[in-house]
Image 1: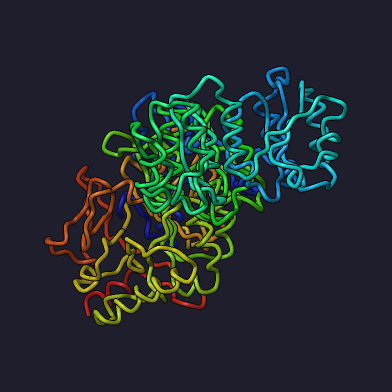
Image 2: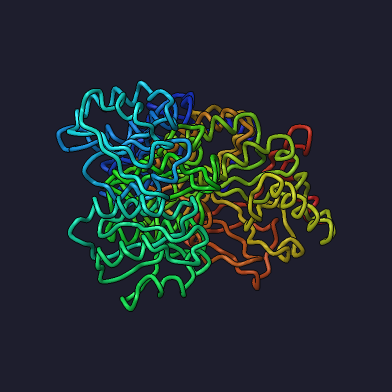
Length: 619
């Protein structure tokens, strides 16, 4: 019998003695706001886990701490007006720190584009023209009790009556020009009356670069023409008055042409803060505004013109504002890399779930883990096969609460029926990989038929806007030479609790805690609720033992197509012949036996015994 898996029925199973101390079946949490699993420092091995005469539990190095994503929260209200108030209440928890309150139109925010430069009071939003000021805004003005209330923009943006209503007897003022460019110049003059080290330039059309620039503290943002092909006279005059040592374009040359930048600089040094798109530019701005790690990173929707929740974010001074490409999308590569590098202590969404869904926030938390080097850190990869299925959302809730990633090997027909679950897993930062279309025994198929099995999965995942997969787990663990030439590393495992045989959650939990080692790949199936219910305890046990949970690609980053991957320290290269019927012995001498998995998929593929699988392999 292999030490990492148990292929046992009847008398063999009865011979196992199972002691589960403190390991009851666990009901998963109710959603992404559930209390997170605490990654504790190692003080002892797992809590009293014993499984017959098996090898003892091996913990990670004493004193190590598991790596998890940071906690998340929101600054939000019932609408954009209340969300701006929430930002104000966070930034100006001590209202005496605010001298004034700025009032900007919240439905058309052209005048407020550069208001993030202002640092002497919060920017609150109101309805346009003479529509009533929202009651939540009136209450916030009362709380802050400023010396004055100042409208940003002309009377078409905030009429005199609305301004007076908001001020409630306090002095009023207005920062308003003939157009948004002049309004931006007036804002710059107020924010930097003695000049500025830098001036930032962006196009005058409503866009996200000016909003993200609200976090810049060493100079104001001024506006070019709407196409950025010319420098308005009012902007040129403002640059002369500020007399900066450098003029910096926000965005690439498509956003601010080089000729326009040079014309605006009038011989001064120039530079750019730019990425390949608006999300990359927001990252470039964040790096400049906050050159060191911050305790917080803020996240706002930034696609199209959907960045209203970021308009008021300029008042935030404890971390940068990054942009997401939609309501419920996974963050882009440059954003992901920035988050990993900075690994903030908390990620805060600006706006409610309608602006930024909970799954995106979970995914950003996973992306915000510090980089894990599993050559130096004790890592384990949990993997889940044969879904997505009805228990998958329960598992995702558990993982969201724990803020850890896993790897899903999905069956294409299951994705066809439950693709929203795979989409959610992807957005929440998990790896979604290939387990074929219909879970066949691949050695029974020709190379072309095997390729069709994997390509149909790729096509189906594409309909859910998931990227192509990088890894393949052959169904039943069964493969042949053709399978190794399909273009994927083949991911097998070294820990198999055989959850499909109906074992209890406590049994599954104890098996994983007993057999898992640093570098292990654990096989489970997210279509079995008993296995899903074991996951909270598994995470708790492994964390208490000092293990960090990672995806398979994080665990084994250098695997190649055709490799057989059993665990981090046991990868059979493509050049080395192998047979799925051969017993597997790990470098430490652990005998896994034959690494095969008899689990089937109801209505798609039958369960198989080891003898049945071996018969196929020897045909």
